[in-house]
Every structure is written in C-alpha cells, then in structure tokens.
Image (cartoon, rainbow, N blue to C red; front, side, top):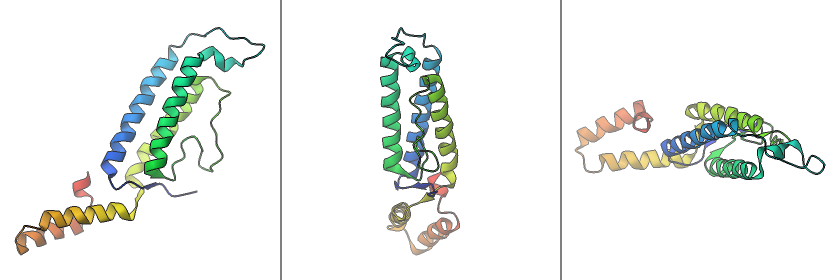
Length: 158
C-alpha cells in the first residue's frame, strides 16, 4: 500500500478543498435519499436506472471531480480504487449505497491528512516562507523566528 502523501505544497489549501468536496458529497447524499424511483425498462436496464439517468450522471461528475482533485494533490489515496488498487466502483449498486461508500472513503482520507507525509516541495515552500519572514529583520529577531520555526515548523500552517 502506498503511503498517504500530500503532493501539493499548499497543504492547508488541499485540506480546505477536500473539506469542500466532502460537504458537496454530504449534500449529494441528502439529495440521493430523496430520489423517488424513476421508470425503467427491466427487460433492458438494471435496477440502478431507477435512480434516474440524470442522477447517475450527476454522481459520475462529482465522482470524477473528486478523483481528479485527489489524483492531482494526494498520492496514495484509496478513493474508488480501494486500498489495494483493485477498483471497487460498484456501478451495479443504487446511488444510496454508492454515495455512502464514497463518503466513508472521503471521511477516512480527510481524517488521515493531518498525519500524511508531505513532499519536498512542501518543505521547500516552508523554507521560502521562513526566509521571507527573516529577510528584513535584525539578526536577533531573525534568530528568534528561526528558533521558533525549528521547534515547530507546522505552527504557521495550522
């Protein structure tokens, strides 16, 4: 299993965006709970079509938007692919089950991010921020800033 790693140097932004996506999924879950069965041809279509093609499309778009964000910003996530990269997107299930599965995965990823590794680009960005903070300071003030940073480099990131 790959280690969960934030690949974007803007860690706070990644966490904030994932929180927004999680909220969007929670709203989608409420919408899905209200879906009344749509008519479908049981001879040619499976029961999942009772959710309505427009709802299935909306779900697919939200799912693709989420996985694109995760792929671009978080390595080692298990959204849709599961922890063993064995693609577990069950399109044969009704949306209420699928949304619950996606929400569970997103909540787990979100809760794990504070413990995720960060890439070198993150640390380089943090170093640049520290240099910018001490650039115009006196040596004594600069040393205090550097000492505080070395004690807790994540303090300004929280």
